[in-house]
Image (cartoon, rainbow, N blue to C red; front, side, top):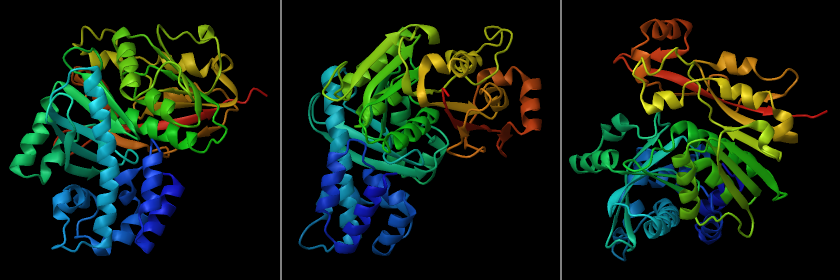
Length: 423
């Protein structure tokens, strides 16, 4: 979270003047908007002027999103006006992105966007409808949850929803269009036509960690390499950062490379613009052939140890995509070909294979775990797991995965920074 944003929000609440805060929110492409209220300091400041329930209920309150509730016959608290102002910036930003998307590809006139407005620990499902194919979108927050365990945490989304909201939530799940918003970037995947999974919670976590670090960089000449961008969330958010001058993405899946290119366009990014140069290469990652070095390398590698025959186990495309640990070796043994001196690599690990990944880090290199060694708990839902009962039991016994009372399995995603010092 940007400390400047928090300070401006605090000043705005204490003074009752939101103009400076709103100008800053509108200026920054990756501003937190309604994600600000999830910060404990801001939450405490506004709690007395809002109904009980906390950020998740405040976001979906009608006074937040419905301008019709404002009028001379109704006096709203300063805190309600504060939250409404944040929603106005947030919703306008998404509406503009949707209109731009609709000018590039055909999407449904009604649907929902899974939003992570100020990090990865607050998820908001926002429904949209348009008057026509290129009309302004009407937006409404349907439901909000803290610390989502999945990209679409359906069980918790449905938990306290009305029947009408439940229908809208289910429609979002079954829609052809998967839409994810994070830190100023709108990502679209056509589930029917594109052989791309779309962003996962892993992706959002890595994107947030990378961009938090980029925000500390003031020289505006940073270079970033992403290996395996998928639908392009990390590549897009890195390219939107004012600190970034160069972004390169290498993707072996041609469909994914095309999806990344599309999402760069959706977010107003061209191969070469005023502040950033972006390249997407549809090819196998070969460290020695990249041809340039970077300040940051980021990757969400496959993290499931590969079985003898995934085909025999009936693995789906997703199971195949996250299986095999070779990419850890390719990255961690080739720092000299990939990183500038003092550069850093950001990798995602899983509790099912973190021992292997950590063993591949060259000795003497500084390591940092932004979420600690326990990481972040997310579902471990793999079809191939059920066909490997001995492996499943072994992972449970070692504590590499967890099982809840209803039989659902979870693992821990563990991001790690590794610094390269050529000296």
